Length: 139
Image 1 (cartoon, rainbow, N blue to C red):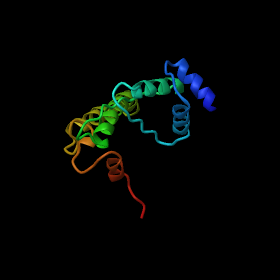
Image 2 (cartoon, one colour):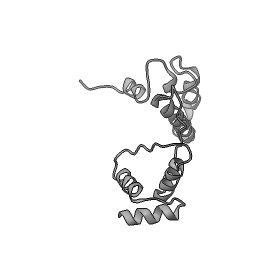
Image 3 (cartoon, rainbow, N blue to C red):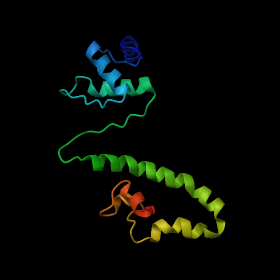
């Protein structure tokens, strides 16, 4: 998209931008991380909503506060994703392995390393470290 197309698209999604904002959004669209800062009420969240709408993306809104870490942000987001993934494959697992269905579905409940059923809550293993711990490594 050109800068003028970005400007028009943001306006169509309810945000009145300027050339600096258009340029920043253009950079974000090309993969450059974009950090928006400013006083309350200047339009940071409105820009995020308009940009997400413009690109057809889901917006994950995070309210920052002292003590908030990326682990907490990512865990909350991944928790929902993991829950949906498990629910989505339960039926397929039951159909594929009917004789093992009680064991497969009960594994999460009884496995001593999993607390609350999700690996991210296991002390010492975060995010994809759990997957790495379970995957055989060729050496």
